[in-house]
Image 1: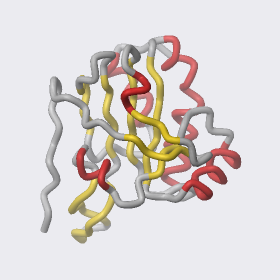
Image 2: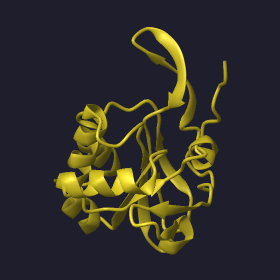
Image 3: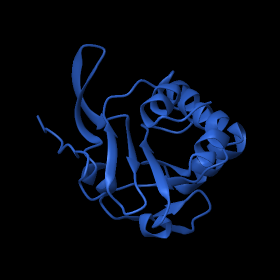
Image 4: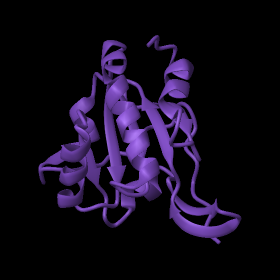
Length: 159
């Protein structure tokens, strides 16, 4: 059984550079000076992940108005991410972490309960990161549905 590390408010957000849905590199450092929401999801085009991604899509204007950029991260390869983005009209970058190094650095990969059984996989997690690169809100084991509304409330963002 592997217990993932848990990031806390005030921790420095682990740096990363990953390929986006178009194969272009995206680094967390590209967003220094901006607030960023990084969320980890298990797999593109699955029902829960689609619901969550579409929720971010539909809330992007209120998040942007509050100064946040959204980045979604999964282990999917760029072609699957591109297909997901296109089919769902997603208006934010999707990043590929095939070796799960970034998932692991954020504590978003490890043992979790799935239908009463312990399995190892992606832990649906979301992190708000401030303009200086510090974690302000780490959320682990979030629900796919209703998560963005809850996140906006915790961040004090009106709809």
